[in-house]
Image (cartoon, rainbow, N blue to C red; front, side):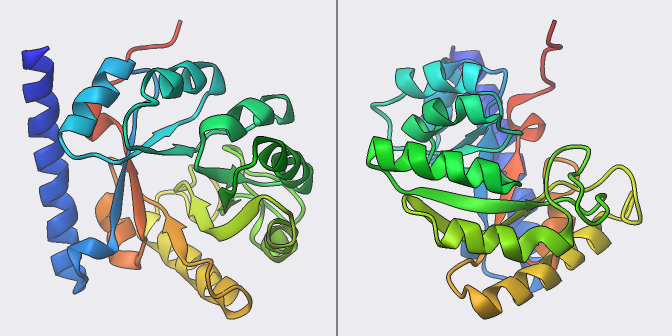
Length: 239
């Protein structure tokens, strides 16, 4: 365990240096960017080590892994983000532990999340997932709504009990006009965020950037970066 703690501490320090350098290069304060460590496929013991190292935001993308992990770490002061594509039959479980759902991409999901949040007596922060590889009316390869569907979805979240519209999330697309153009993709997300905030001023979270492209996300203006591999190591293959 000591070796694992040392490994995670070193990785975390390297990521922290990258974020700090990216903020300095962009003329931003380090405090403007929140690090979310994506702990998917890794055990609760790693989450405990990360908490001991100062991490307070963690993310998961599969409820069957996240629910027991969150329960095992319930004694820790952690903010849990759900970042994966979410099926409505998993919503009740996710609403029991997640503080934020970053992958809201359809009205049916908004309705289910609202009902579950009210049932749990909780308020869930919601980010609309933007798919920059999707045509009008379609969902992205990795989930998300096409840009022209964002306002309708945001309005649905904003008017739903138990939900709070907090902002936008995206994953740099592998196809479409922004494939291979991560900085351009994140700049586009910031443009969309600016328009959204004109009608929803409190929706100022912008979640973008992962291990390979956090610098581009910070340069564009992201408020949250989601880092997995660079902190926890190369993920084991799921069999």
